[in-house]
Amino acid sequence: MASESDDITEGGLVRPLFHLAWPIVVTQLLQVAYNVGDAFWLGRYSANAVGAVSLAFPIIFFFIAFGGGFNVAGSTLVAQYMGADSDGSAGKVAGQTLGFVVLVGTVLSVVGHFGSGPMLSLFPSDAATADEVVPLAADYMEIFFLGLPFMFGFLAFSALLRGYGDTRTPMRVMALTVVLNIVLDPLLVFGVGPIPALGIETALVPELGIEGAAIATLVARAVGGIVGVYVLFFTTTGPDVHLGHLAPDLGYVEDIVRIGIPSALEQSAGALAMVMLTVMIVTFEPSVIAAYGLGNRLISLVFLPAVGLGKATNTVVGQNLGAGNADRAEKAVKLAANVGAGVMFALAVVAAAVPEPIVEVFMATGTAEAAKTVEHASEYLRIRTVEFAFIGVFQVLVGAYRGAGNTKTAMAFSLVTLWLIRVPAVYLLAFETTLGATGIWVGVALGHIVGAIGAAAWFTRGTWKEAVIDSELTETTTDADAPVTED
Image (cartoon, rainbow, N blue to C red; front, side):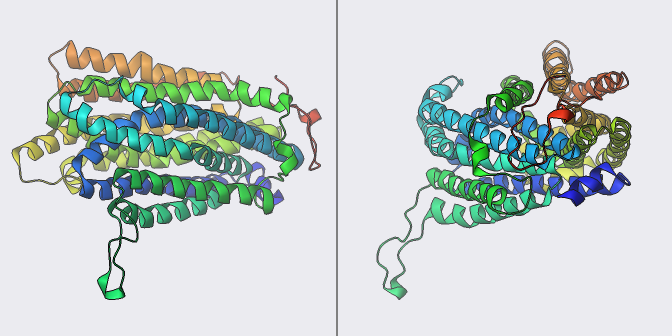
């Protein structure tokens, strides 16, 4: 335990930032593999199955985003307690966070399972979609939402270990769940039929289609959640958590809610912004819609270094503020922002120079429609390279605000980026000018540019340099129960 925190609160900053960031990047790549695996097998099952998952995704993402906000609170509080050398308090707040997040996941699971049909009915659809795709989406969602408590348990485990300073253990557990999902997907989607050579006359596993993909995800997520909980409570990895820490303590719960609500609203608003942009973009021709989806998938991969640095900065800032090292926290943020901007700028140069070959790797060519999609997606990628360096800065600064416990500040800048800049800019440029599809690409890029400039200006005020824990109330014993207090 001591070595984890000492590396972060003492000595050089490059090593702890790198050691925290790279497993986060790998974990995000594994999440991409999760989604790609589902899309790969469902794509070979039926086009309607792929459409059903695409239809269900915005709703699923909204539920996960809302619940995930409370994990930010747990990660921040654990980091600050570890920086204050209070493993007992870190363990207590970890147990409280896990219990609270799983409870939220259970409530959302019930709402999602029984509300899948009504929620899907809110989406505009033609007759074919209503008759063929929507029922499949409802089948998928009803099963998927049953696994939400397990998913929330795993996400809480990952966030709490990150706050503690360990990002490798969640990466390993995530790898386990991805392998399990990849193995189960084809077996459950297509089934395993009779094998006469072995004397087996009936199907070993029935063909379940899209429901099979949902069950595979449920099982994999359940295993991840169970393993994560086991690691927290029954190994020496992470903060010192005991089963008794699950008993609700209103002092801790109040602070988890106070810090977590802004993050939950921030992430939910991001999900809604994605839905709003999709609603606008589906009014364009198919090649533009396809280019938008393809471009976003490519850019989501490019963003991974920035995301990793942002989450690493969250931990470094939290632990150093908890330790009373505000100056070191500021140096860490500046270092991470410079590295993030530099790495993202290098990626921007490559993407701007050769966008077409990059796009063509992920796009089957040979038809006029495919050629138009490649053309639009290449233009999208080239225009968005202008914001890459700003994304590196923005992710680091928002991570710093979260690590300090200033989740309201992080929420404010995210809302400005999405709802005051990106969504209105896309509407104005795409529909109120002659730019058309180009207006979409420019409008999307403007968000992070303005957001990063505003977040950097606010950072210079220095008002974020205070911890949200009261160091006088922290304890070093494993049964610490002192609540967190506001500044």
